[in-house]
Every structure is written in structure tokens, then in C-alpha cells.
Image 1 (tube, one colour):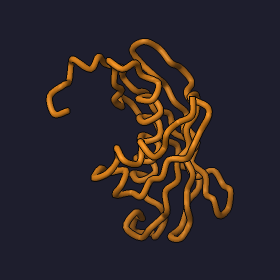
Image 2 (image 1 turned 90 degrees about the horizontal axis):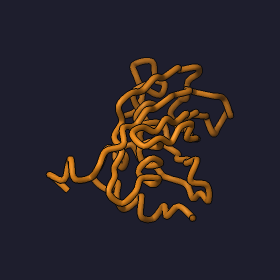
Image 3 (image 1 turned 180 degrees about the vertical axis):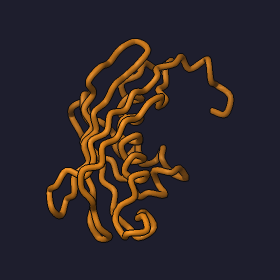
Length: 144
């Protein structure tokens, strides 16, 4: 099944993902998902490089969207744990690409590895593991 990124881009309107200018990429593989994010000044820390929190937000977004694509119609996924290792940096004007691959697809949890690379240098920026909780939709219907 082909991932409909138009639907994803529509669903992220007025969210943090839109604020960060995250763009999801087409995929034929439900076990992985990619997205890009431009490195803008507003996403940097005081030394002028991409803030680790923005990087983690990109990773959690990729894993969250990826898990929700895999969920049954009566389920949704929510982030429950993140572990990040920041290895290199990206500067303003660069674009970073997140490549998420599901490692475990269980009934109550999904575990993703998300590696984030600089599209300018090809360097690995961060390696992040995200664990998502799978919950029945009926448990959180308020606000939908």
C-alpha cells in the first residue's frame, strides 16, 4: 500500500509539524517513513546549529505518523519514550532528512529507530529511538 503524503500534510496543518516545516516523503514501504525539515534560524540553539529539541521533534513526528499509519482503524499511537544521541550538527540553510524504520510492531507498543542526516553533508546528525504506545481509540475520543 502506498503512503498518501497529501493526506498526512493535510492532517498536520496547524500543528507543531507544520510549524517546523516538516514534509513527509512518498513511500511504498509501511515499515519505514522519511521526512525532511529545513534548518531555519528559529530552530537553532545559541551557537547557531540545529537545536536537539527540533531534531527530536522531527524524529517523534516520523515515528508517530508511521505508527498511526500501521494502526488498526480503532487504534491510535502516542509517544511514550524517546532516547536521542546527537552526533553531529546542521547549520542554517541545510535540510535534514529523517529515516524511520520500525523495529518492533507489537499489540501495545511500536519501537522505531530514526536516523537524521544532513542533506548537505550526508553526515549522521542524530540517532533516535522512539517507543509509541498503541491505545484503543475509544479510550481518548474527547477532542477528536
